[in-house]
Image (cartoon, rainbow, N blue to C red; front, side, top):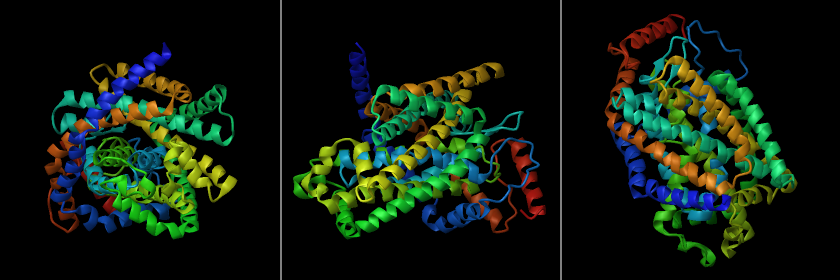
Length: 508
């Protein structure tokens, strides 16, 4: 009976997924990014240097320093903590297992479509962050809440659509947690040769307990944990990837040739391997790209909206760097490791790479092929870390979606709903440890697509507002005396103006 239920769920999901990730979604994702790119005059190129210099550079310089106490009466987090929470939600198994899966199912050409989606996605993410901060709300406890559902409800003034976005975000959060947990247990049981249900349950329970402890502390604790783990795990991953690529450096030219010659048809692959159609290549590239960098989903903006920063554009610049780092750095390194190792060994040309079938096994093989046991051990460290931080970030996204979805109830009702969500979220981590991974991935792909639809519509409709806010910021920066556009709500806008004036007086 259980198998019949699973088969039915798979069948239904395949139908919905085929619709959600069909050509309309592909056109909407690329079209939204293209529209914002045109309206902001390719800001991801023009302001890329500023994005680096005003975000990650000063943040790196501050690492290790004791943060200054803020006199602002709120429970916000620093820009770097907001970025770390957001990037921890994007840098997960999608960057490693997802990229490997895209290559297995869509061919090397899928990597090009990841890059294309990321190029335009840099400004889609920028627009989401700007709108998120502009339309965020502040409660009586000093907590900021924002996200796609807020600018849909208060920017588009379509609250019913905001409820739909929150509903899909809630389920996408649970699904994302399931995917990450499944890959943690799959990786550790494979490396430790403990592939049994009891071992998976134990690992799932450990992940659930640690998650529960962090989640109880809310966004401040999530941001703090993420700001410690993200730099560490990213550095390990980058160093290991570069070492493997250097070992297989002679295969790099052939790898890039395969990537670009396969972007429209994988039949160009040597040895007769391929047979992928154009639509599949684009679909896998875009779906995995969005799954990884989340540009267009309206998810990472939830974390960014909790930032203490007053200027929407400043946090928007973090969004540009976030997508760049996630896709052009992490995902690209994964693709090069997987392809260069298999091209160098001849596995790709002979078709042995595709015969592996399993994305986790293919990824583990690529990262351990040249480094042996050391590679397998390091892989078993950074992949679970990537997955765990993603679980933490999405717990917050789900929490905020639940809070918004139940805002028609009393404050007490909202709090009860949030507590119930947290309990269910943590309990389902254990259940996800033993569920078949591909089904979880497929279901979450579907909810990601459903979540993206209302968000992309909102970004398109509010793109003019993004342009106005951006123009306002740079006019003020150039010395023009214009009224600041910091919040959609007059009382909050006045409060933020005073905070900025105070910071200027203190030389911040």
